[in-house]
Length: 149
Image 1 (cartoon, rainbow, N blue to C red):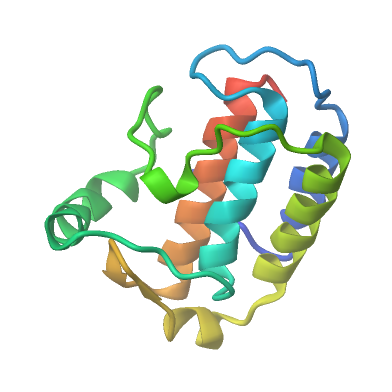
Image 2 (cartoon, rainbow, N blue to C red):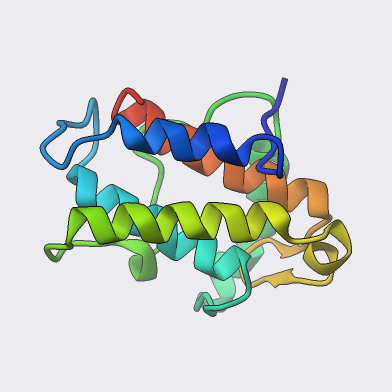
């Protein structure tokens, strides 16, 4: 079953962050644990409407085509492309990033479906609340699996 990021699942995601350590090694990818947490926060800030995503026109066209694939009931592929805006390559403070991500998870989960349905995604276009919740949950699941949490 496809996961959703909603009020009922938010405590589970926050609890899973508690077992992550700053020096935990990923199963794949280039980001370390603090960078991954910051990356997830950046994505959720866009979903929460507090940050804008920038994308060239050809990515917006490709995004609408990829959306159907991303919404299928299967995990995101390892090594998926990351928008430049979301690439975290600098050092970040782990505990403050974990706290930031927990707060964003709660904020997003508590956002009403009516509000989510009015948010436009720069790459994927207009999304339903359920599509927003699926994409955010799948993104977290992808990175939590990357670090075995």
